[in-house]
Image 1: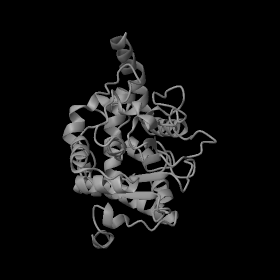
Image 2: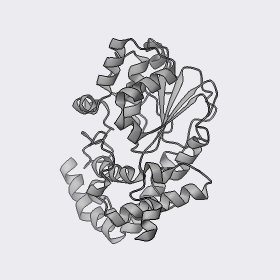
Image 3: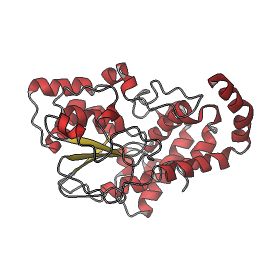
Image 4: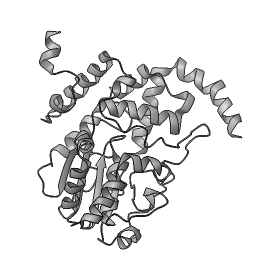
Length: 315
């Protein structure tokens, strides 16, 4: 059945996606945004909640693994990370994670803490001074490249539009899963709150041990040296890649192959594998302008720009 459906996709949907590539990409973007845009109404966070708030393909599973291992003092065991981590903005018909009301993950953790995943900007996510919020942002150029490969592997396969058409959708109001800038700006506004930890993916990559220390302190967990070493080991890319099936998403299409899709390379600053220098600058210009429009003073050029603005103006 799977080869038949894959063949049908190549015969029917691939020509359509190529013929209507730009329109198709924007339609997919709108559909993804609608599908992951709701947080269960009425949920009241509790002190044991640690929200992992990151944009699509921005280190979500990595940060969840760090938080879960800290909550379990380096000894968390699971068949899949989402056995222990709810994802409440996933549509109910597709959700494969514990419900927010399921107290099992919290009771299983020796610290009594649990991680909650969300890709939503702050607003739909209930914000409470008694809960904790770990926000991770990533260079939007790397987000685009990682997301493009991910969508090919787990969802659209041969129907994925060209890089050009997907980039056109990404740099528009139809960007899949909502605006990268709006997500960043919403958490940047509350970064000074004592219950918010704002991190960049790039700083986490530069210092894993320091990141574990920061998140553990933020969660109020004092790890022993052995526990700390265990968390660092289990949060390493090599370890997570070896057990990648514990982080892979479920198959969402007959032609999908999700194996290893969630943990592909984990690099920073490698967007040149898919994007030209011109496209990289285009992404920088678009999201910088969006942050300015939103009144957000996040230091984009310092953190993410391919070239400083002054250097571009001379060129």
